[in-house]
Image 1 (cartoon, rainbow, N blue to C red):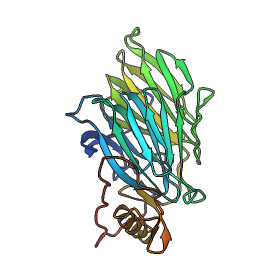
Image 2 (cartoon, helix red, strand yellow):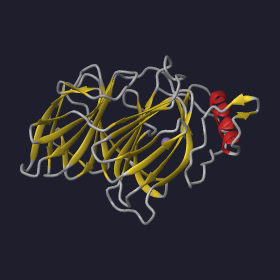
Image 3 (cartoon, rainbow, N blue to C red):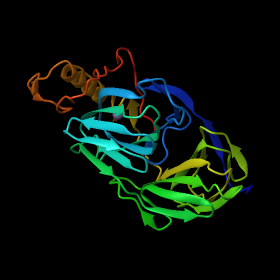
Length: 310
Ligand code: MN
């Protein structure tokens, strides 16, 4: 192990999303974000009980949802009218900007996926909503690993996802042929990074990283050495440290409690009505989605004081 590297390990916690247990790696008290990545959920690969993941219509503001599908299929429907099945090897990117709502319905019982959120910088957080589907991603090889570039640039390849701050993401799958699989991945020194172990026996800089754990690599780290059992999978995310203090509550990223309350009030009014005009205003979160699932209600903000954090 290199003495100069400063590794911090973080366990994930179990949460429920749409009826299935997921491992949530970010945010946590001591790690709010990595670059602009402010949320990281790992779903699967274990099969849940029927009907699998079913997430009803719910809103987002101030962020992009980034879905990386490894196994299984999920139907995405949103208030812009998008309808898209995401399949293995593909990315869905939903830019919430000022406001959007969507539902996610697994089409297969088992779903193995990562869902990440990217906090939009102040300059872009109120842009119009948009949905983009990326069926093909750049792929390469480093050492004994197959690499898919999910976002930003890595190993000279650029991913197509349209993001608004300097960041990167890669998926690494250890070869079945090498035991152990080894590689040294170069990193941008101006980025901070996190390595998330999704399956198999993963060693980062010689240190065991149990499945569903994450190692944080601060800015200034030049490369990361990996040694994994055959078939192991991990993802690495990184980005320029974001110096904006953000507020993350429920499905929203904002800057003040007042903005949260406004979005919450608007969502609750819109979820209860099919009208185009609500309280004299056009709908913020767009048209209701034609899903058989119920819309999700927000938790209460009564007496909650939110504190923005970097
Ligand atoms: Mn969502």
